View 1 (tube, rainbow over the protein chains, first blue to last red):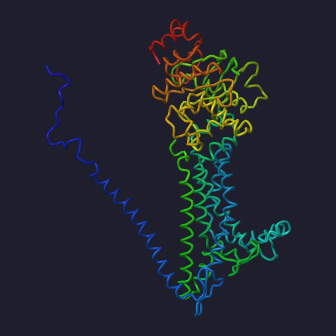
View 2: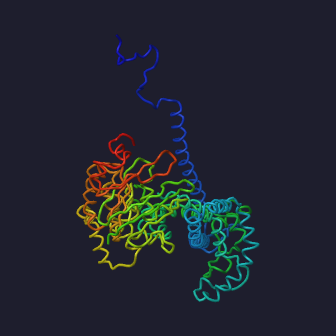
View 3: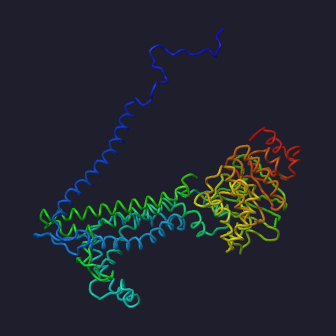
Length: 329
Length: 258
């Protein structure tokens, strides 16, 4: 009599079910090559950009008769060349700071509204409209800024001048509001969608159990947000802001359309003048000769470095409180 | 101050689905009442109606009355937020705030209720952690993140957080189901201590646990999938486990179903 625990024999010719290594399949190999290749390509491209910028920048800076970091002029058409990035660095940083100061609180507010306050019927359309803002081309923002925002801001700036003019940075002499502050407002609107949608996704991922913990202690909705949602979303808000900042620092057409550039630093943020790296490159690139282009590339290198520094700083902020980030929970 | 809970004619819905139907019971102060029953019988839902957490779920709705001594928790002028400040809750999975230290976790509820002096806060945190049998394990690292503790310690931290605000009632929703046996024992011992001061209601899937920790046990059941859960009977724990008055209870306890 046969027992039913008798082992079933593998028919001759079938391969053994357990192999020495399971990575030998074609799909694994292809995927490994693809992902490793993309990773390496990214590094190579970054290095190539840095090398290109550095090489051309070095040529330009060696021909610069003025101090590249501190000079308040941009004269590259004739020998000797005299140019400096002080005004551009100031304008880029200031307009981005203004944009962040306006956009981040508003974006976090909208994201919280969508994720935690709005009824579901309302949340989806609001989220959609915000995402739609990201699809508007930047030249359209520029035209809207120049044709609508600039004329409508004179009233606000006059008001600022009246009450805050004594601070110096909010004094206003009248005239078209083609200033760094206007650029900041426009950039704020442009980075709003990206900051909002990234923050919204982070807020949605707050574990239900943390929110319930707060609720069960007798927290109101705002207290739940403050105890559970915002601390959990903190690093996400920083990442979202960095994405927005990246766009603000590099924005070209909208700034070039709105700003009335000059190579001076105004004490007032409201008076026209100043410039940003990207705007300056866009305004000069077409008519520049070879020397001029190298000079513009040198300014581009500085923007590259500023962006890297900002991102590095953001990573440090996120890493500093990693053990409290909730990633372990 | 421990208070008596008196529930009458309570029905709870998720949208149009009736989750529990017409439940009435009394929970005595300074005692432990255990809810047992098969999955989906609505014992957790019922527990969450006792601190108005049920209505936090979208579509959640409650009919009926829950009296805490002489105050109806579902009265017209009652703010659910203030209900939750007097009826504390401990959840199935330990949920300390990951962004807060051990100290901040315990103090979290206090900060909602008003401002305390630093020394007062430190006293209450110490007392609560001692009350949760956790003080000796964490007193040297109060500023470390609460999420760094073991699962059982985290759950006791959550209990400390809940009792720090001196609630009238403490609800526990399967507080040991995510814990190992040793941590479970620690929590069960703790429940025995806590009932001197609080009215405790605990949902559990573990019948030995119900038998070990509770004074009274309520058995919930449902007629079938999609049917609302009902309270079958509530009695002294000893009676429920030795000589229940309803056949279904005996079947469930002896393992004949569920």
